[in-house]
Length: 350
Ligand code: PEP
Ligand code: MN
Image: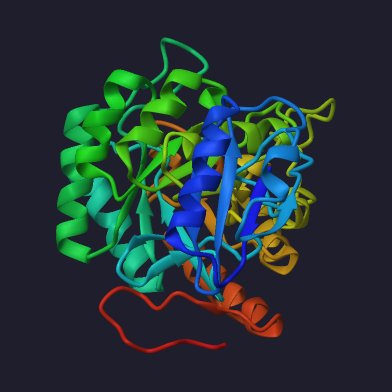
């Protein structure tokens, strides 16, 4: 339930509504807006009886949130949430953000070459896993803390902010010391203790949809993060397991307009994991931008044939140049631009 106060409501009236809500056994979350204050009611599982609240002085309207997720929903907040991971790198505004880099950080040489390629082509942020959730325990598990240090080095040289994955609650704190945005991977979308920890760390979170998760599941997982007081959440569609083995996953671009209808949070798409095949990454990037994605998370490697993970879906640097060119064209066709590369003031094609 959301209690919308009149623009003229006094602080005292707002406080009375909050105390009535807590007497009912729920928590009140006041959200001051430009025009008026709204007070969210959390802690309920089902419809809240509003009879004690509707008649209180200063109350303009009571809105019942019909979805199982609350603070994530558009009913709760009508305007888009814009998530900033670094100055000028914002998800959910007019501009589209391109995050690119290798699946895993492998060496200083590899991550610096990747970062330079991302920067040179006009990408806005660097991705790369230091802690890797691999299906097999015998596959490369990532460089751990050393990988984070190498990402920080790449950021220092190129200015690109870093998106990197935290795999568990204990590791999240360490990742937060280095990352500009903490990625929670598909395999961990329903790791509730990790979600809560990420909510408490207060850093932007990129939450990937689980490979067999519904959109409601994804939004409920985002609710865990917001419920801890962190509304800086970027959602990510990365493909679903399906019966068809022609591509690695079924890239569900329906999720983009559906999520935008249901939630105020930004949503990006990952055509690398969504397809698993380098030759499909550019076409499906085009499709994701056309569908309205707020950004793209894409894998690139200076030498994909030698990559320690996900080489088959990693772009060659020259392919990334082509991808950026095509993204610009499609973005401008739908009235959007690309976040200018770090260190430039130019606003590219709108
Ligand atoms: C990744 O981004 O490299 C990754 C492991 O992705 P996902 O969690 O979507 O499989
Ligand atoms: Mn990967």
